[in-house]
Length: 93
Image (cartoon, rainbow, N blue to C red; front, side):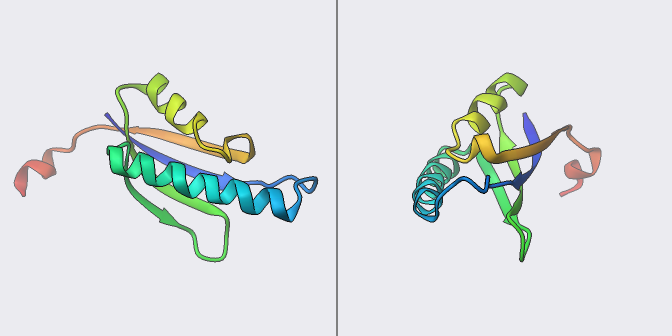
């Protein structure tokens, strides 16, 4: 099942620049793992902001939550999720 996930990153002021840099490096590594596994189908960033939009593939909403919670920046994320359903126009390709 595919999900549209919009994420906004809110880094607390108490996070040091070193901690932020380390967490972002861990986030990149985990993101690449999710991309390689097919869990992240597509991902885009919002220029000039710490926001992203992604299509995730997951068995169900619980599985999606597990995937998102595995991200190192998870405690700092605000996400909105929309489950996606097949559209008949896709059959026309």
